[in-house]
Image (cartoon, rainbow, N blue to C red):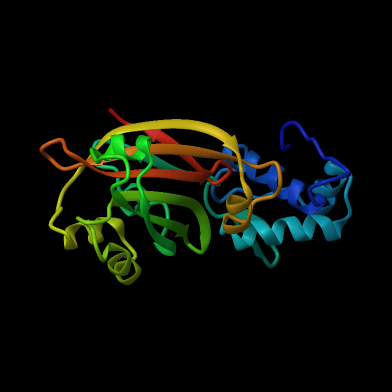
Length: 244
């Protein structure tokens, strides 16, 4: 009923493993929206765990907004597990997730200025040693953290952008404040890697989780790159869809 079952007795908590397996089944369409999950007894029997563990797993999925327990009806799937985020000519987080979630919010975690290392300077068309602004942000969809991002920009041109972002909570709105009302995605490189300590903490991921890493450059309409970003997405919560 939930496809292949693999539960380990060490490491990740049992309830979390059950939640991950159920989420995977929802992602694969085995339980589409409005479908009913098997009973706690049936789930417990399949995974070889007690009802307390099953209830903890279902409570976690309910907190993510994937399921809802209704009296007399059981546990009902309310939406698909993974969000689909399009990488397109104009890549915007809130626009890309519109229609899938009710709200998307971005938060500033850290901001600093430092000398640009050669690779970053080259991407931004700066000289090594020029000052760059580095921001760390986290994005949350319906109270569920989905990504961490590091942004690099010319510190002299974007002096005060950190304060603007902290107020607007939007990179697009912040760019507009600095006279960039429209911009395009010039390049995106995607790879998968193990989640580091920052991803484990801020994205609330268990050890051993995978993140999708999208490194992209944004340019003004005349083709000049002004923004380099490296975004880590929780792979169990979002898929990246390349659009042409």
